Length: 366
Image (cartoon, one colour):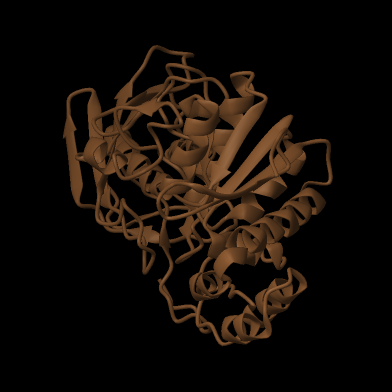
């Protein structure tokens, strides 16, 4: 694909787009004996990319085609994976049925947009596949197809271990995702998607308390404190904004936000994206906050000169806990303002050893 003129990063194709293109080629092969190569696909927003086939074969009543996924310059776990669609004729009037092949997961928990036992092929890719098959049928004067579509990703089970699928209750492999068909480099859309689905699963399980953490260390600290079930834990990474905005529309009764001092200092200063490339801690503001807590001028001056949030916290000396508490309270106010709802919010600042530097908003917390 063409490089974006501003970011100079090459966009790529979602797993769903590759699956739909492979399905289109396989259905053409099943219907006519000829596999288009490259195969074109109409995406939901009107783009019509072409995909080279890496696999094309027909045997009797089934045909299959495969496409190697190109995720562009995005560090996508499925970049370079072979996406295979196998189509077989089904009973008349049955329409299109979907199955999970090798490396594609199966849904095991409620709360996802698919029923338990369904292959983890999301609604948007299913719609793309159905539209692609309808186009082929129309072009060849054939009726609406009655076929079984099996999507496979060889090696997908191993790749899934590097995703959040297990926590979302998707077992046995990867999810086939993609709303627009296009991967935007470093958009981290799949991570945000996982956050949203994690919240959906917690709500569907009837959980009234969830914990969203910036990392594993913070998550484990909160889990130990409350003995929360796995389904209550949301790995939000740097995407506190994506988490809070989704909870504003899909609320829970109680939310614990947990993270290290530096990440939560950014939230306290109003940043909703905590990634180092997209937000920075205002060291001067932290130094001023430390001054309001009664720190001596030398400590305040040292904090103002600190190169990082960790360095500023170190300069706080005996007022470390007070500074962490002030940051936690400010972070909580930002979170409450973003939620704009009835969710009770607590914020926990976790140190590198998994201890609590500050914990505000919870019953009995400072």
